[in-house]
Length: 497
Image (tube, rainbow, N blue to C red; front, side, top):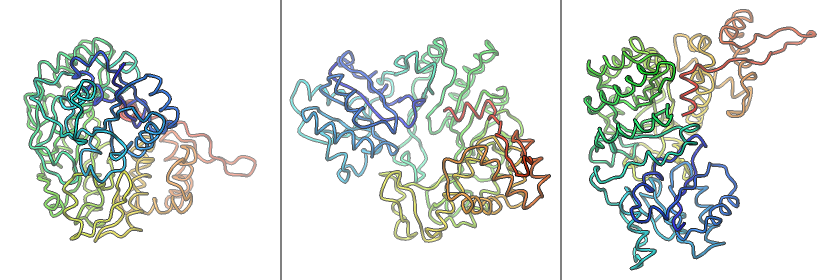
């Protein structure tokens, strides 16, 4: 083997689509190329040992916001113990502000942007000459029909145990300034028939969980309907062996034809991720986001009331011009629409995104270390932003976990944001922790808090309805029995993805 493609995935269950695209498009070098994936948190020395055991001449690393620091340590150690090894970097984290990054200084070459054509060409020049003179190589974007699809490179183990990431298109026509897709000119579709043939092959090999990474799945309704019909046909043919698909939708574009298709899916088969981000028109204008808020709200309400789709809707705190009060208003509005999950995100400054143009006017202050989370801005000071960060964490543990479905609405009452913020402040005061809170302890804490508002008996009854044991007297002392609650199937599938 001559070329090794590698990355650090956030979890074992994440299989890298990007590495498989590179391998599929290596051309004459494909037989000399292998993939070796690692998981974030692995020991650097052990990764170095495994890489060098393969005896590659070139190692290509996929670098992302979640793995850049660990990858930098890995590259530094590789260069110490094997200085002749050629290291090539690629991926979104090193595609912008490239010259400012320590990891780039450590590596031999960098491919920015699309690597399907440029990476194989660079490897060929490294191996066969003439030796490349430039360190940074701008990725060439080929016609979509010339990109070899990578799905046959998912191994049987991937299909059995990991989330399969797929895409029917690349890019995005929208210009939301917090997102790297703001730099795209449009969305580019793959040939739908070729794509569906690959999905057919994956399904025949046993794939049942498909996570689409398209930014705008419902941009082209004819294509969306074809893809959904593929999954409906699989469900109809094998109802005892169902498929599960995850799509990202534009919230204000849901014509009747798409609704008709969506309504046909049974429970547990379909999940939509919908980015609202903010209901504040001023904030939307600040970040160049075009969204019909009324249509978006009507569509989310329709999906919740007339379909079996699991709904995962995103809001982002810290956007320029968004105050705590306006965010709270948007949060309450979204909660009233009834999605299964509200993903409470905190603004991050992804390298290359246009959001930085607001830095001076709105006083944006970001953490200098990945994932570059906002620390404060003109409208939200640092202590308040930290309270929002804790809110987001506790919201995941309680509301989004699917383990407190009866308790959460009572906890939120008629002022969802502020009532949960009060609970969040109380929880932090009583635990001094946002992580490593065991479920049985969390259930006990939720019950203690609600007991102050409702009384012991009603709080205990609520927790019991969620499958958590109530407090019981044992030897004169209060005791919390072990919580016994499992997330519903669709929630479990989502968490696995």
